[in-house]
Image (cartoon, rainbow, N blue to C red; front, top):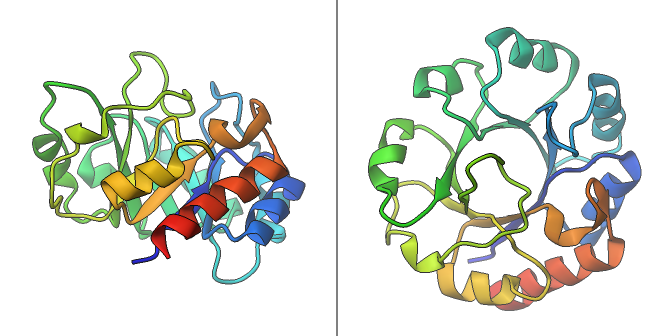
Length: 207
């Protein structure tokens, strides 16, 4: 099975072109104002305009207000929603778009119990736990904490880099991997060489 690849935290049309040109299956736009990778609606529109067919644009939110998500959807064409906070299942499924639900993984937490209510998510995104940050931490977690045979496709995130992604794919065999800080020059600015190396590593391991 080929492991799909999402490059998240895209903040420019140029970085979107680089990610897509290197073979990314999806790009992520962050609509969470505290994040250094947050994009305005105007910038999101510019980025979306350069994304070709069959590449999914994912909108990332953290505990948004209903009207904030609706405002984004009125002005931006997204293919998938990604929720990183404490959003309820009813909230996540309320926008007539497929969604991903993220869970921050740590020892002694019951992932299955937490994620079971989100049974209609297109996938479950597993990220490193941080008590204040929601993704983009650059930290990995113990992949052995992932229960076998989860009910939804697994998107592996958290501290992935060109150096460790092959081991991650080999160990977890996720449906997809999601990277942000691991392919950056500085927060919010991607590195073309790192993106290419990351994607090549995934493809070499999952071919």
